Structures are given as C-alpha cells and as structure tokens.
Amino acid sequence: MSNLFSTFDPSTNIFNLPLNWISAFIGLLMIPSLFWLTPSRINFLWNKLNLTLHNEFKTLLGPSSFNGTTFIFISLFIMMMFNNFMGLFPYIFTSTSHLTLTFTIALPMWMSFMLFGWINNINHMFSHLVPQGTPTALMSFMVLIETISNIIRPGTLAVRLTANMIAGHLLLTLLGNSGPSLTINMMSMLIFMQIMLLILESAVAMIQAYVFSILSTLYSSEV
Image (cartoon, rainbow, N blue to C red; front, side):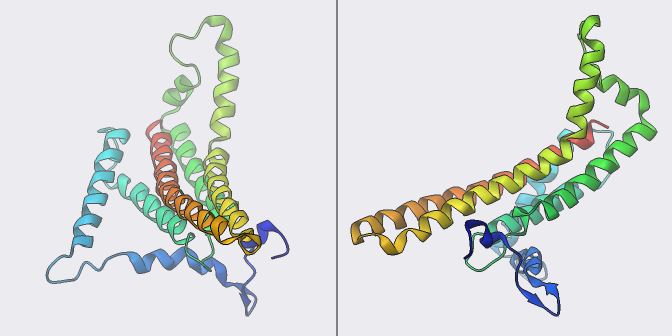
C-alpha cells in the first residue's frame, strides 16, 4: 500500500480492463434461485423483503404513481446493499465507495424526475419552489434556496453513500495496520474492536442502501 486510499484504487487490469468493477455484479451470486420445488427460508426472506419495500415505496409514491414504479427503487436498494455488504469481505473491491458509480446512478435518475416534472406538471413544480405559508418578503429568497437544494440533490445522494463507505473502510484499514506492532493483550482488544466495527459497517451497508433508495423515492414522489 502506497497510502491509505490505495485500498480504493481500481488497479487490477487485464487486457486494459479494470476488472475490479466486476465486483458490482458479485451480489447476483447471493440472489436465491426461485426455481426450487420447495421454497427455502432464503426465498421466504427474499419475498418478505421485496414485499415490505414494495409496500413502503408504494405509500411514499402515492396512489397516482405508475404501476411497477416501486421495482426501480427495490432493484436500486438490492444492488446498493449487495455492493456495500460484499465490499466488507477481504479482497473484494467496494464499487460504491467511488463517485463514478454512485453519481452515475444518482444524476440520470434525478434528471429524469426533473424533466418529467417540468414537462408534465409545470405548475406543481413551480408551487414546490415556494413552501406554503412563506411571507411575501421572503418569497424570492425561498425560490433561490429551493432551486439550489434541488440542484444539489444528486450530489448529496452520491457523496453521502461514498463518504460512509470510505469512512468505515478507512477506519478498519487504519486499525488493521497497527496490528503487527502490538502486544498480545492489545492485539486481542484490537480484534474485538475490529469485530464490533465490522458489525457496525454491516448495519451501515444496509442503512445507506435504504437511505439512497428512500430518498430517490421521495424525490420522484414530488414530481
């Protein structure tokens, strides 16, 4: 390692292809087969997860949403969760710790919501720029604030996920690198801390995927 951030460096190249990014598809191996004669408990868990997310996203999108819209956000949640979670395993590249992936997903989604809203519901979009009950003197100021907050949404979506992934991995790397110079007693304490951090990072991996998909759902429900 030349520096701490080299753990995030997509450096494996074969035929000039950065094969680290293939890790984004490793999550597909964990998806249970739906073709067994008797469904397994993983199947039941999978269906329960999909149904729970579908009901939650359906409530947020409202009754006027198109049929099947929730599946976009369920797929997004599953992809993000698997990527975040698999990145905690040794020698697996964490693709969600790069803005290349997160911003590439967040920007087209936000852009499509904005285009749909401004083309089809222009009055509704204008009304969003001035919250209800705003004093007349502050109206022009509120339009400016709401416009800026709208524009930075894809950036905040992407940076939030990337920063959380990088922070946890860096902390694990920092603690792991101090191992060889420690005594046996300190080493056992370090291992315990690493296990606790790994549990925390597993929770963060799921929470951040949920936050990303729920915020995307909220942004789409506004248009």
